[in-house]
Amino acid sequence: MDAPRIDLYSDTHTKPTPAMRQAMAEAEVGDEQNFEDPTVNKLCAMVAELLGQEAAVFLPSGTMCNQIAFRVHCQPGDEIILDYFAHPINAESGGPSALSMAQTRALQTKCGIFTANQVRDAIRPARRHAPRSRVLSVENTTNYGGGSIWPIEDIAAVTAVAREHGMATHMDGARLLNAVVESGTSAKEYGRHFDSLWIDLSKGLGCPIGGVLAGSADFIKQAWRQKQLLGGAMRQAGIIAAAGVYALEHHVERLAEDHENARNFSRAIAQIPGIKLLFDRCETNLVFFDVADTGLDAAEVGKQLQARGVRIGAMGPTRMRAVTHLDISPEQLVEAAQILSDVVS
Ligand SMILES: Cc1ncc(COP(=O)(O)O)c(C=O)c1O
Image (cartoon, rainbow, N blue to C red; front, side, top):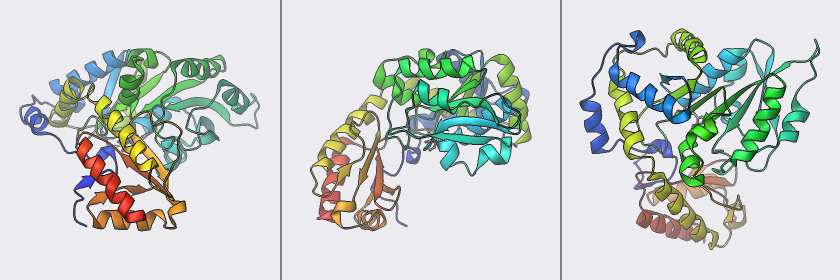
């Protein structure tokens, strides 16, 4: 398949910029699993500080951040409460059951944001027959929930219920910095409600690899044991951590441009007959829409777009998702909207 000229498939498709590559080439490195890589150590210290946590650990992926956190928090037979569309339920190969021997309890929501009452209702009675409600996991921003931002009051409310019941609280912050930039709520303010949380480097921040999981010193000590066990301990990983350091210094504030671009794109495609936006508001960088009323399905629209140099992912029989990011300009989005209009009319 030829590389598309305008790739709106995912913010994971960004390529490291020349300046980021330069920073990677010049990184000081050492043996990461002996804590001797100064660049990894620097990245972890930056993320721990950013999220208001005692410590952090560098991991190869966001998926591993979620799965390691669950392994630390859970015993076999425990239950993790999270949104129906949450990434660990839908896109981590059954990780909670395979790796933590924990089951998931999915809450139904419109855009990935559930209420304190939903959590209260989902928590199991303390009975020998019931699984133990052990972790509450919040995704911010919500991926399949349209890039929606959790209001900080809602986070405070749901995590308070979890704590009342002795549960651990976890945040999947794959796109937390999008939420921070857009809402003005600091990462620390979000972070103080969680026992564990992480950010992804390889999404809007534009790095090639990696996530950083943060928590208390004791949590991170346990997370390191899991990292070793799962084969995630690395060697001269400063080469890739340098991209993360660079991104935290240069690519955070610019996420606002991605959000503005996504809003403009969503306004443009909302005018196309047969295209229906799936969420009332486009808050960050994800634009979900449905093509059913065009008479085509998502696979067909995707194929025709691709033939014209635009890549947009099918997320169901008629649902599609376009994602703005570092490598996408406003002009490209105007062109992509025009091509989408041509394809469906
Ligand atoms: C909300 C969310 N969580 C977790 C992940 C997993 O991240 P990674 O691809 O780095 O494993 C993703 C990736 O798309 C995501 O969108």
